[in-house]
Image 1 (cartoon, rainbow, N blue to C red):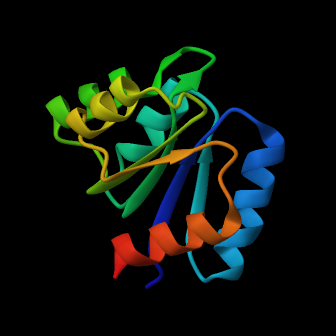
Image 2 (image 1 turned 180 degrees about the vertical axis):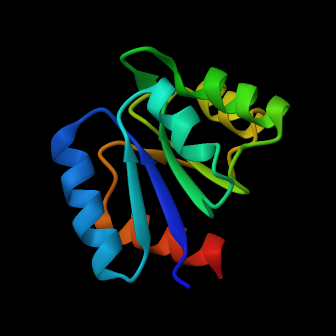
Length: 120
């Protein structure tokens, strides 16, 4: 059974590109464009890796991740995606349970490498 990747991102352009890239690599992909959609998608418990944008239209991605962790429904592995290069943002992502932090715009090569290493 292929790994299941949840992409939490509100940009349709980004989610379309990620869907193509990830499905071509053999992953099963679910897209969530908001915190509420993320909670619904993650509640099934079958997400292997979540790519998480921090700024979503209905809330903060890290706050939502911490809430999922408290409820025991967070994916095993989460990768934060942000345009914020401040060290304190990276530290907060790691504290919230993210395995990695990717700076936007995320290169395809870096995304592939990160996902492959985390799901290996």
